[in-house]
Image (cartoon, rainbow, N blue to C red; front, side):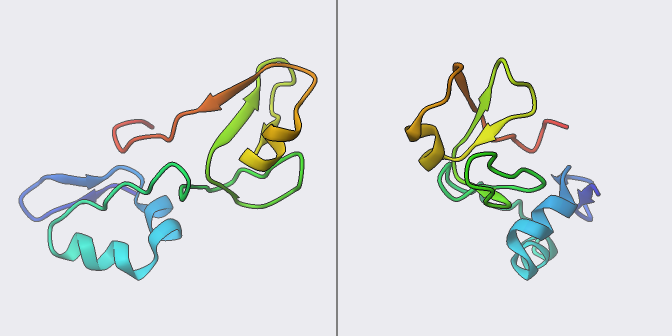
Length: 98
């Protein structure tokens, strides 16, 4: 869902995810014609991603993906325990990315 202000400015390209992340605060912020503040790296909720180490869902905070295993993600705590392959820190998506 794309959220557009009355002046045509795009407020969010990921409206559904923003509502899942921020709830009513998202709607209140948009109604004022403003974009949502970006959550910190440690507070970001990876909607639709679970940690394959401890099964926390949704994964919150830093997300590490295995470059060998494919669809294998770990939270910060599980990343510290180690994994047999190299892990890559995933960047928090910005509003301009799909």
